[in-house]
Length: 291
Image (cartoon, rainbow, N blue to C red; front, side, top):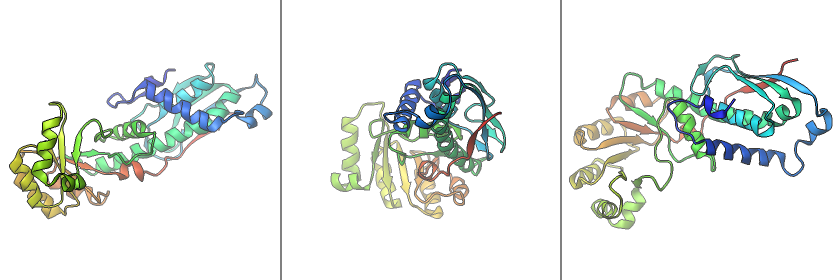
């Protein structure tokens, strides 16, 4: 089975990113001598049958990474998938059934489970946030607060959970924050400088802390998106009324499962939360040898 067969159909993840991430993870785990435990205790010709099972309810992400880990260690492992990324499962559901060389299955086990546990945890938490916004126009977005080296995977997991991606890095959109404004000499100068130098396809977002700053941005007509930073609900409502659809509004700062519904009801377009990636609990998943 190819890893891409189980990718979420509406999410974005390059096959090259999958292969590279798995290769780095296996290199980290195997070190210089390989899996000395399996090599010492399991005869080379031994075959094994195993089942990967979800031990909790949630949304699955990372199956393509698990399959890639198995494939990189042996082309002779037969893999049957029972779900695909983005599906909600109950506790006890079988995710994959494996059959093939025992050494390769045991060696790949922890790498495969680490990817699924991490990414399914993000997808599950994201789905919880999205569920609280049902019936509103609000889109739930992640941030750049990701594990170094795993950003593409973690942002993919957010999509699996029904969320949306903010910028992937510093190079794909302009996001002017308070320190940029301070150094550049104010809202109008910083926006004029940005517009003078970027291409016509690059979006410009600017962060504001007050309604007075928001009005300054609206007066320039130079921003596409305004990030409303750490504003209370009443201020968010006033910001929506002030902008009257002239810019896209994104709320950020202190967003929780307890507050997100009220934020959605203010009428802002997006909410961004670093918690989706930096604070997602690990999803409980196991690999059991089927004797």
